[in-house]
Image (cartoon, rainbow, N blue to C red; front, side, top):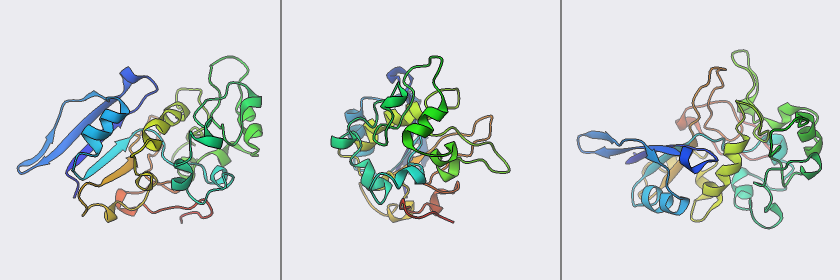
Length: 235
């Protein structure tokens, strides 16, 4: 089982990134006081890859909308994750501020909160007919909750686009094991030393948006996480 648990409250501002750590001891779990998240390289070396089996949770979305994912040319999220911020995908995390700047390789919009920015600009720029196509399946409305904000939209109190656009820093930087960042079963790692499992650990909000640990599926417990390809949907 995991020897170390980490939750990181992410933000686009370094002084608003906080983390809490619990470590297993012979007498039980020792929980440390919350502290600031250090620079990525230090975070990796000191907290993630230090010889212990770690479960790390981040409060930004992990994964991409299924409809969008199918347009990338990749078969799954792990494949595209390794390319984000590089080469043809170098502008992926560069938030667009004008409708004409939006593209499949630059999907986050808008960069500034000024009058005139509309979600229809995002739909048109990415060539989708509805905002639901820009939501992961776990973000869509159900009989018990409202729809969550599409991950590429960066305005409003419930937006998650800003944190996710900043998530590219830790998730796509070496030596982060991208195969662990996309919703594979945690069970295959719990008996390994020096291993890491990553999950979205977003809290419930007043609007009752249910957190998810899956790439493109309904909310599930950690034991039920399954790998998901862009060409398929989980039942």
